Image (cartoon, rainbow, N blue to C red; front, side, top):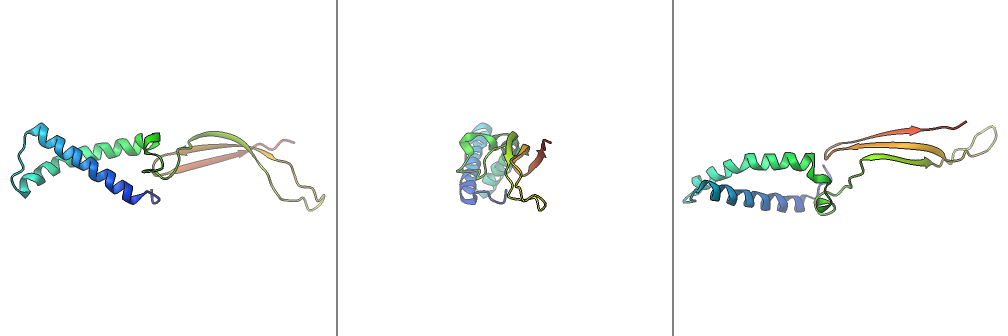
Length: 123
């Protein structure tokens, strides 16, 4: 999350707050006459923003619409197969072993990533 695009995210949060603020004002029929009436509506808007934040962090950050402009890292969760090519040379024979078959499992959330690598050495 430290790589989050702060400027885009700030604009997004401001727009979301403004939409929720107007929605709460319209649904409740509240009139904004002074700063205190505006603050009452703003306080009612905060729980809605928290629910939207939880939904974003849990599910929506993976959606393609938010990638690149708001979320700077890709969604790569899954199991991947490939191989590792080493440059290590056996000191006894001087040979470099061939590619090592590998399985990579990635579990990813908005704030964490976990990688498990399984190297399948064939003999």
